[in-house]
Amino acid sequence: MISQEMLALGRQGSIIRAIFEYGNRRKAEIGADKVFDFSLGNPSVPAPESVAEAIRSALSETDPVVLHGYTSAPGSMQTRSAIAASIRERFGVPSTPDCIYMTAGAAASLTITLKALVLPGEEVLVPVPYFPEYRTFIENAGGKLTPVAPDGRMFPDLADLEAKLTPNVKAIILNSPNNPSGAVYSVEVIERITALLKRKSVEFGAPIYLISDEPYRELVWSGVEVPYLPCYYDNTVVCYSYSKSLSLPGERIGYVALSPTMEDRGEVFAAVCGAGRSLGFVCAPSLFQAVAAKCTAEHSDFSVYIENRALLLSALSEYGFDCIRPDGAFYLFMKSPEPDAYAFYEKAKRHELLLVPSDDFGVGGYVRISYCVSTEQIKRSLPAFRKLAQEYGLC
Figure 1 (cartoon, rainbow, N blue to C red):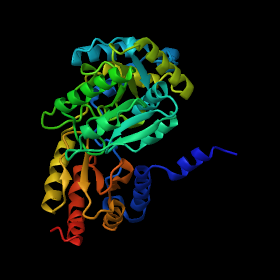
Figure 2: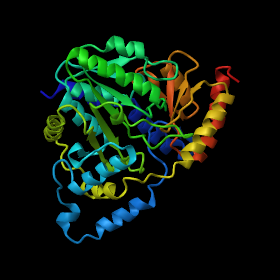
Figure 3: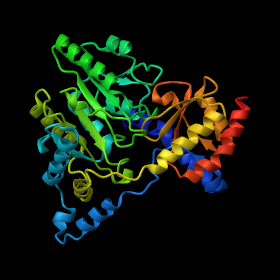
Figure 4: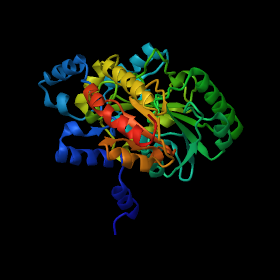
């Protein structure tokens, strides 16, 4: 008998991936130029030249053990030192290499962190809307996902957050810039959340951990600031990925960074190392650890995303659709003209528009549109969006 839980998880799959695979099949049937796939958050801009230079430099190494061999389980000391130095320089946080654990992307960072922190039956608070895989990661650690309602800006509703902060809560995950809404939590919101966490930690006599999931940190528009959460709260764990900042989603490189002022940091880091060991997430890809060490201050050219955002927001608003204005990431969260987002998704699909219904993000009545695609695809898609709007009598 195999694991029925894993069987069900494998058969169910991710709605985002399912739509992406449908899009691939549809492109083969009618041509890629006729399918407008906005499902996957797959960066379309190239990695910066510094990445290619770092790869070439690494490949010039003649010792195969140095080039392709195992690093230490938490990652190479050179890479961890470079990342800690970057954190000190960029954010003024006194990070050190023994705060950093290298991982195969943010998914591994989150999975390791939750496994290290969460005891069976404990709750992890997650503001809505949220990345669907959070539920899988939390439940795999033996925990329970407890949603926190959003306000009108898609920020956490602070009254609901306070009501759900009980002694059974081990952590809260904050994702800003947010997938799927593009919301960037303001300094004021972060200060109010962290003040609440501090007060409740004292009241309960145990730390409530703040897990900051931030693969989109560098993708912000119009000069918006993304607060670095260890500056506001000691018991913070940052889960980072270079997938979006350096356009390297397939290379699977990221890290866990503990706040250097975290309570019992040495024990927490040891638990992170133990979780990595138990899950098989040791020695992240060595070649791209070397690349990360040399590119800590780099990011891709995001001008295409800025253009795509402006183009989509303008056109969809003109057609009568209601969108949450995104300040970061590369997603547009658009309100469905009917309550059933899946029904709207099916109608959009008839126009070859592949949009992700919001139910798996913890809220109904919206669709997510990934605008990290070519500008040409967006331009070709606009007549289809207009026809869809006309079908609902919006324009």
